[in-house]
Length: 335
Ligand SMILES: Cc1cc2nc3c(=O)[nH]c(=O)nc-3n(C[C@H](O)[C@H](O)[C@H](O)COP(=O)(O)O)c2cc1C
Picture 1 (cartoon, helix red, strand yellow):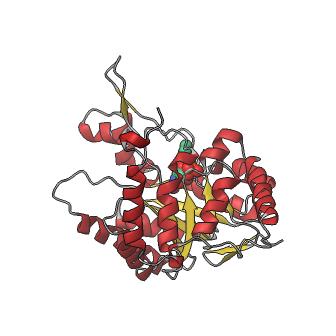
Picture 2 (cartoon, helix red, strand yellow):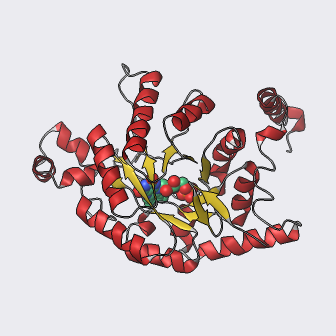
Picture 3 (cartoon, protein in one colour):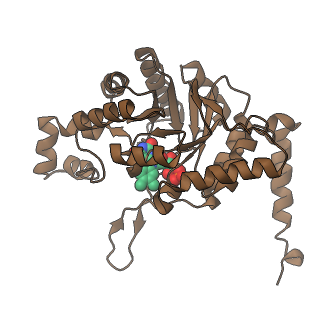
């Protein structure tokens, strides 16, 4: 039985990768994940706000916040679960890259061109096996078009890919008007891999205190379908690796993502919920499922259920949508 897979040109023992989270923010956390059998880890992102925290002007804003900009940056007041400052982050990355046998992929969340490029280079020098770009910006200005958002995203990928030698992946948000076109453009811009999809901070309103609350609830398998569909639709259509994430609770979701065409499956919430050792449970479950279903490798199932097996997939998706709706017609509803 071979669980081996390739991702971003890296040879991995199996396809289960620990996604960026507080578990991958420290050397100890990453070591625990390696001990538990993770095939690779994506270190928690280096946020440009951390970089700027070492800048005096930024420090003044955050320490003596008395204007609206200070209010905005206070969303990142101390990044409590993460090393503060770029030097601590790079040191952790360097020590993890040296100490671990599995690849340590760095993750970067920039806000300015210099931030993206300069710190991608620093992450590479600190020993990152690859760099994942965590593109997380919320366009709130009505003057900024979707085309402009795409142009800026592509420019970040183009500049970073041209600045480092290690492979570059980009973790996407699911909100592009034409995902296949954007995905192809990202590959043309130099992305070696796409990770589908990131999850976002979920603000809510507390009706008792009328305060806006911030939270990032852990995912469940109910979040699987969006990434699953897009992995299946993009599988074998692009010359790049595909990482699938969101909603991986057990080996069931791992198998589904592989059948859809993922090269690796990334998980954060389940590991936060159950601990790093859950990686081993998922890997054993994957191996068991393969054996029970007569497959001798991960390669044998990859993409078996991707959209390349379907004629007229756009029409089919619509037809299935309409058919699914009819399940809810009054006469058919179970009382
Ligand atoms: C508490 C927490 C912290 C996270 N931190 C990061 C991060 O630093 N960088 C990043 O790219 N994604 C981060 N993520 C997103 C995860 O890496 C992952 O993409 C997302 O949670 C979807 O996977 P899941 O459904 O297995 O949780 C974080 C998620 C959680 C829950």
